[in-house]
Image 1 (tube, rainbow over the protein chains, first blue to last red):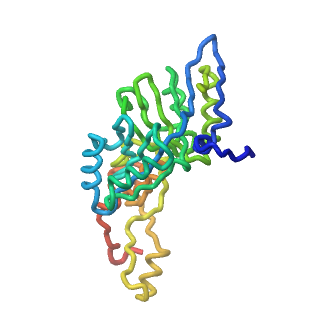
Image 2 (cartoon, chains in turn red, green):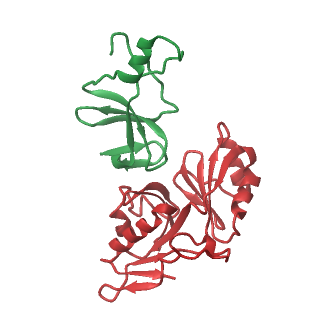
Image 3 (cartoon, chains in turn cyan, blue):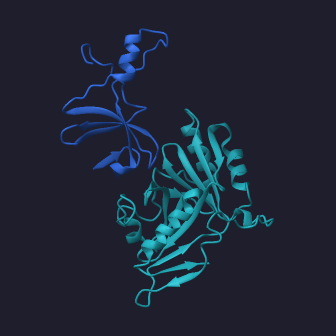
Length: 203
Length: 95
């Protein structure tokens, strides 16, 4: 059991803080996968209250410029993933603890239930030319670039664990958001499958 | 087996939980006819052919769906959100 830290940032790093350490495992001198656990991420769940679907869309559009279409992500500093009907998963990587939650509560008021999940979810960033092949080992969704292109997101199962996938860029770079208690298991699963392609854990 | 979720698109059936028959309608009166309650809680038809069932997309959007499935071939004829699906009372004489 690691000692409780008094550093407010360390407290927010989540369950992979001591596991996602820089390492490089090459296959024929190359790596096909990169893995990263980015620093403190704010994760907030938003679900429209009954009959407030339109109000939610309007307020989100006004504040962030766009209400993402279903199964799409939108936004730069605050990323909004439309993962289910009237439901958004909101991500930010530059906010103080609780700031995104306060911002969304202020913005949405009585239109939606806004729940801070920053301590309950973990974000894993998966990249490299073999990222799609790696994900295909564990999920049934169609990952072909013409179907699952940049900006696409999906709530699905990966290696029997519920995850939210977001394809950030064509590189490809996927963000995987997973419940914190399953993060270590998913991390091991990813590294286990990544071994055949070669992988690098970016610190 | 692929289920086309109206919200998420084509998904493998492993992502879903199945509750079963979508036909039974909860009796309005909690203290009502015990026979009606017995039917609602315990008795289910086991048809050959088309069957409307409640499925839950638990590994995805977590919405309840009504799936019309052929029990002999597993062909899926329709998938609709349960919140929009019409609940049909069982016909007289049906168990």
